[in-house]
Length: 241
Image 1 (spheres, one colour):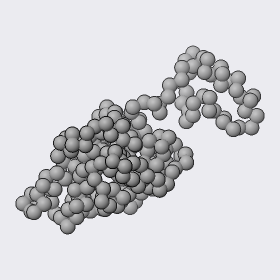
Image 2: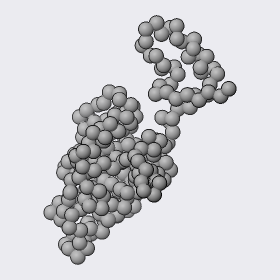
Image 3: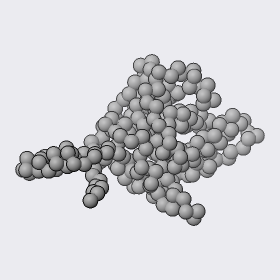
Image 4: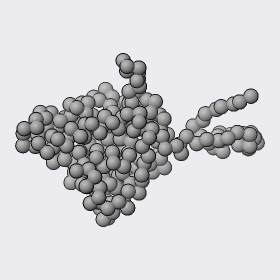
């Protein structure tokens, strides 16, 4: 007979801290001796993201890595809890950039390399490419909540958002977004003839990348590079401009 079983914990951690667990240990020894243990957590692909969402009209699964509207916040929170395995979260911490600057991290799970930021944390503060690079170096999955509708009066905020998404994309970060609108509707009044033509052109690329980052091919095939601080910042800027 062939037995296939799944568990939220490795065999050695089963019934951890349970009453009279010593009586259970011989079974764990037998389980490890007779079965091949495969850790899905060590996989480069997070299948919970790949398989999340519902089937669309074409029979394809829509990935739930982009949540729209206030009604989606609960589902967004559930996914954060799932990807951090409902374990302890560190709040209000910091990470360092290559030049020693401190970047505020609202919530994180260093054990699982998952972090959570608000849009204001990322785009309404004086952050730049080196700060976003530190985030990409520290976490393979980033949650971004509260992305509002933007317009031509938010040029500096739009620029930061563009650079942030570009760096997350270039370094294969799993970006999970909660926003007020779909990617193609975030930038209101998009007009290639107005004074922010550069931002309009660049944001169209950002929209395309946000959509691609929810695709099955991106979620399955792309691997987190990590430790991207070894890449010269000028090389990074050349790649995203």
